[in-house]
Image 1 (tube, one colour):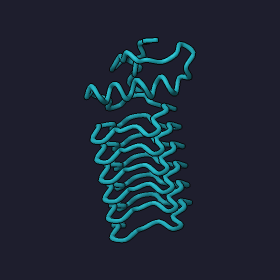
Image 2 (cartoon, rainbow, N blue to C red):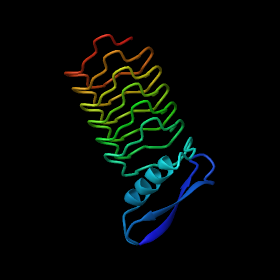
Image 3 (cartoon, helix red, strand yellow):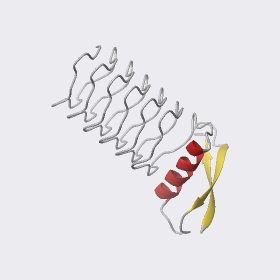
Image 4 (cartoon, rainbow, N blue to C red):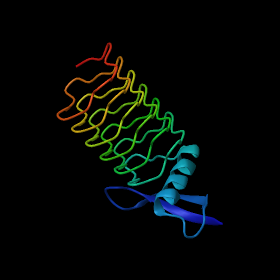
Length: 167
């Protein structure tokens, strides 16, 4: 069944995109928001500052999207492709980014506290000033990443590839 779902601005609450999505009426909000986000990205909608908290974007292809200032805390982005994606100043606290492609993504000033980045590909990513406190970066590929002035207190870097990373 087709349903309309609004994506709102995380700061003002105003509607920034309305998506017609194919989901059951009783589908969980996380699935509805994930479907609406995929529709918005395909339509090349401006999602900067969007409230996508808790969205189910598992396996989504969001390559090259500008999600700067977006609220993605508690979102499931595992196995997604976020290569070359703009995520500067994004709120990714407690997000699941395990086994996610984030190569050359802009995560500068992003809040990744307590995020799961296990086995993520962060090669060449911009993590300057990112808050990675208590994040799980075990077995992540951080080769060539720019981690200058990133906050890493309590982060798990066990088995991470840090070859060529700037710190």
